[in-house]
Image (tube, rainbow, N blue to C red; front, side, top):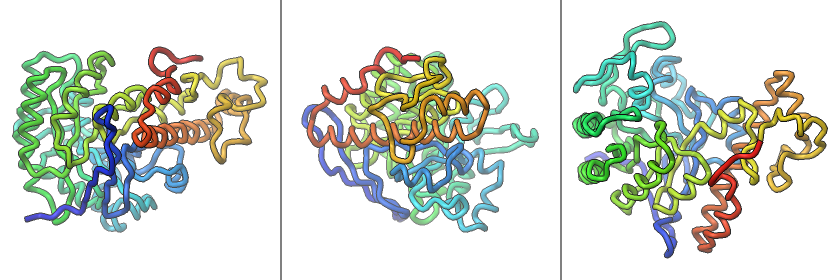
Length: 374
């Protein structure tokens, strides 16, 4: 029997909700959960070095199998000692399986029971990705957590389309597991869209298989928050208590807080880094536009309550100037700020699970419930 190189312990649970503190032990280190993963699609968190991300306190990052397979290729990365050494990141890495591209490239890919055929967005080369090949690529990358290849339906979709995607995901599940190398950690992905009976069926079926952890997929794909929230609330408790639970692609602060209370342990999202490159700064007063004229002569931070180590000397006026001058440093400073904001959010969530003061935490991040200031 294969033995996965992972251990997950629930350290404590919140008596007023489903939230739990966890300790996820992986080959390249320990992750305190609930945890947020910065997205490093192509072996880099855009604008930052691995040392930057480490200094911010992150213990786990995400990379993408599809993109790394296209360029530079898993064989090259393997020859260079694996993804950790290649990108000089010493802590754990989780890789998406390419399943997101099954959805995002749905207009140009061909999907069958065998797998999915893509045309490379780089040069048009035809690429076939099966569950077995996805797992094998991730093994060669040498990551700590590999995700199963699944089918994520687009939104909106009919119930029949969602059911068809779920059934292919289920038919691929055992194939993902059969392709594991010794010690390879693989998470299954629950599908089912907004339909409770499909989510229950998917959770029950996948939980019967020997996955090391479970993700909720098919959310944050364009659906309104009022649809996403109930799906997470219904599905999370269906997943095994003793294994990590991962909500894929969700990163709005209020959605993270809600999902943690539902029992979710891991998150990833491009929001804090992508928004930073588009001059959007996260503050406790909401998201502010760094190029707004009100910051022209502001000789201080965007938010007095969100001044992070290493960024104290950069005024809002200066960062605005950098964005207007199209200087790359603008995106770097904004990304550092936003990821520091998220690191603090997750630290405060973990502390709230210890002390149970959810109303205080929710009041602190209240601006993310309804609106963002500019």
